[in-house]
Image (cartoon, rainbow, N blue to C red; front, side):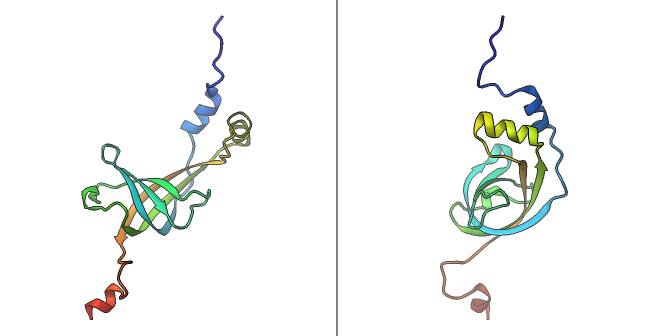
Length: 132
């Protein structure tokens, strides 16, 4: 007889998570800075000053090919425009995760970067004033 591992997540939970149906995305605009680059996966980790819907300040964003990751700077303040995709989880799955894993998760989120702008936060003048 094969003993089931305690750490294993049941197939019905992983199945729902892997096949989650995302709702129509919501476009968000938030400021923050880049923490890490994942060139192979075309992703970045971003620290946002204001949290996203589930309370997180750090999110991983998919970077489109039109944005060259080599041109981006870590630790500099950007304004990020991105789509937040949300796929709600069933009460059964979120209850299992809360009870068995102490994970408070009611939905899965995906973040797709659309554009970003480097902000000049170190100067006393705005960029518009300097150009006049």
